Length: 322
Image: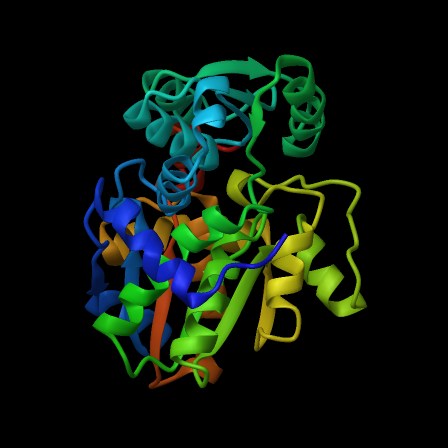
């Protein structure tokens, strides 16, 4: 499995822009004041499925073989990855089956069904759903789409980072949430080629820090649980392709707490008037945590998605206790 190159990312733009426009990179004065820097937000939440993942889905589905298109695809998801595959599959007429953990975000499940996907609910978390997929794809003869170990998926995601370079070529740092690793991988492939001097800061939840621990250990390490409300970050496993891509190529990884992400949902809404799901809030929380180091610099925060369910949003902004 070869990692994608900058040329793969350039080629992916054709597939991505057939279905969407480049996402906006916007300044918000109240956010500048809170962080103490010149902060530009890359609003991936303005994409068709409300998250960055759609870029990878569009690229991967467009590049399927005819045999795989006829067979259909299957994948495990907590929501945004599944929405991206369902959206792209619907556009291409490809059958799509998605396995989601029991108790998953109801808003994300509704959107996946709305795009025509068949949903199976199984397991307590993403990784138990993924284990079922790894049995079903053989039994049913489907094309297994991994959420991170897919070069075409990562190439598609990397198109966002090329947009950042075009819109803000002198950015000093970029803050990127990390779940399975496709977003940080696409970021590294694009920016270490086009802007090798930019500071790339990854962010994980303290309760779901498999990749951070793996990079520290120099080998893949899994964690026992991923008990975080940020479902886009909630994996107990680090995956091979992202690990190989980002190894020794990040400036740092910041871990954020549940309270820090919860607070960031509220003040991201107040300062940008955009809803942040937990994973996106992690990037805001990390930028605030590093505000001394980032002071007066040009900083990009990746607002990775806005697909938070109503009850979690109400809890995050303090309308009721969990």
